[in-house]
Image 1 (cartoon, rainbow, N blue to C red):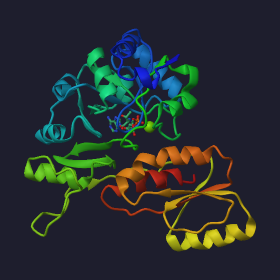
Image 2 (tube, helix red, strand yellow; image 1 turned 90 degrees about the horizontal axis):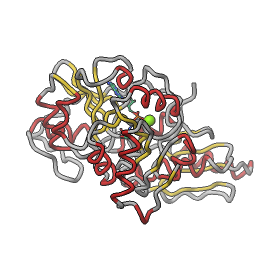
Image 3 (cartoon, rainbow, N blue to C red; image 1 turned 135 degrees about the vertical axis):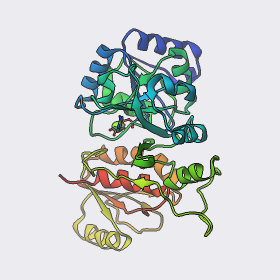
Length: 338
Ligand code: TXA
Ligand code: MG
């Protein structure tokens, strides 16, 4: 296995080599703007079966096909609704996955036997260069073992997958930090299957105005319709979980817990906004109040605390609106108890 150093990040030869590895049936971990992906040739059934084995993932769990350009959509999907093209035009390359009816090109191994396929054009320059050099579709789940936290650095990938991956391209820390927003179309309506940093409001804005939204979070004025994008939160399965138990707390509960920890001397982790006073036995990670900056750091902070053998990780609850929804969703999964 080779880890490309920061110095050779943009080296065309390491990317060409990784594309060759994919063509030869190998597995390549690569950076995307959301999280690192573990890639295999989406048309190579043998490579896909190795991908599932390395992930430790049930074979009926579908993976996303990554392509270099939106005009490749029609290679992988059929009966593509106009709305899908509008969203692709507005948000690709970027952290959005579209669920569409699969074309004959898509093997069962990619879709878990379903008649739909997830497709995404990522925006990380190394991901785009790899996809361009490879030419076809790259099936890639997040590059972690099944059920664990998604990796947001090359080091995380190496810790998780070690020698089981042929090559890891290092693109530094992921800028978005949580997985893409997944949108399906049901009865002609968009449905968010997984919230991400592209919000329901942004999607709604594109579909109702036929144009890309402004960079900043969308403003809702009285004249604008309320969001009609359905949210299908899915099951709050124990996914994205650290090994240390995670407990979500309101600000009041947090203050109470800090008092108790002061008395007990328990070693705990705390992920919270600024301004809490904590005893010495608490490892306190102060988080940004802005959802994009928070999301970017979240998995790295959880991983770092998880490595410290603490008895618990407390996390201050975040708002359940707009771009915070993606963070809210991941925190609730991390805290899920079966
Ligand atoms: O940001 C991301 O989406 C990252 C990067 C690597 O692109 N990928 C990622 O993949 O998060 P993964 O496999 O960890 O999560 C993909 C999710 C799964 O929850 C899967 O169920 C859903 O996408 N998915 C894939 N294909 C689907 C389909 N045809 N229908 C419904 N859900 C699908
Ligand atoms: Mg994943």
